[in-house]
Image (cartoon, rainbow, N blue to C red; front, side, top):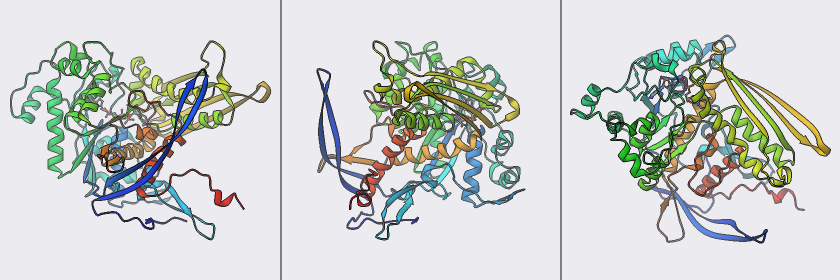
Length: 528
Ligand code: NAI
């Protein structure tokens, strides 16, 4: 049974905050001569979130791409309740694929033995994407197509819907952006007709600019963010990179390994060439105290950027949307290893024909993707030395990732995976998957979720009883569920398994709502 909203007996929230006390049960482990001593710990904590969901603008870098135009079209269709016809009938808009908008949490069981569920979004006051007065999109693209033309080129949404969306989208044009062909594939150069120039910078900043280095780009991006916020009466903005995958930026001592190096490099003609456009957006967001999320695989969040964000207490997150093949991998590998089965060989092939695929056909950009896709099984494998222990060496499954550009299939990406595992008595088990799906229809709701979560996490605070309220860590590993290669604070293990990532986010929000964490013990059904 589904209910829209719920209240927790005996809990009264103020109009300003939703606040709850909870006990955090955990363990501390100490290794003594190869033996683990586990000490259960118990901490009383208070958690709260402000009740006011601010009017939020999500600014996408790469707004005119397949993801950006698909999300804008889908969002507007939902906000204006636009239905459209197809040969299989009339379609109504939805947010399927959004964990926040379309998944549920279990509240408990009635006396009659029926489980009761509520929408995930009912746990805390999220910004409501269906309400145009609360959530809107904007952003940058190096291509000047209006958003209707961009949606047509992306060829993802049904044409009948595109026609209905035309009046809403053809007057929206992305803002000019920073472009450096050295970071993306050579085949992207033709798209770049909407880039920030010295003349545009003068117009935005109201004075001549010194174009040595790349600091001036950061200043222009900050001015663009402020203008967008002001013109749309927004209380908050979130910036998210969904532009082309860049190659990895080299991490060079003296250039970008610390905040001080990074800020100095920005003004240096030579050193600043190593600072990727995506990092410039991250720096601008940090300086404006705006949440920044990287949805592509490259290392936008170089050490200097992370140090800058942490010191400024400005929220950052990423990397790379976990939408299809990798999402499945982080479920399937977790299922196999947690069942005591040993994956020994994972082969993952993809082909796609959209502009993302064209960009990834260049080796340096493919390498960024290969890295984020490859690391996803590491922690799952490391969790089970019964399966993988081999004296003197670390054993991992053989794992390869191939991506090919085949124009004909467009956005309808094919992912083919073969998982071979060792089972009982050295038997072998091979599972083969074939996944066909429009890539951007998977990514768009995830982009929205990342933005809604990123905004919400900025309002979440925790404290020990009567202590000072503290914000969550600026490196938002709480959004790992959405990321192929989750960014985590220093000295923090990376969790890739999808069920664990979801349980983390759900349980934190259950605590805010005043619900117990979901243990799945259900003793009431198991004990006489
Ligand atoms: P796309 O190629 O259709 O869109 C990218 C857009 O970025 C283009 O419109 C391009 O003109 C623009 N762009 C390039 N450099 C720019 C810059 N410096 N500033 C502003 N705009 C710039 O690609 P798509 O399919 O929308 O994917 C976007 C990103 O999301 C890619 O990096 C992709 O790897 C990543 N991604 C996509 C997933 C999916 O399922 N669609 C999953 C995981 C990651």
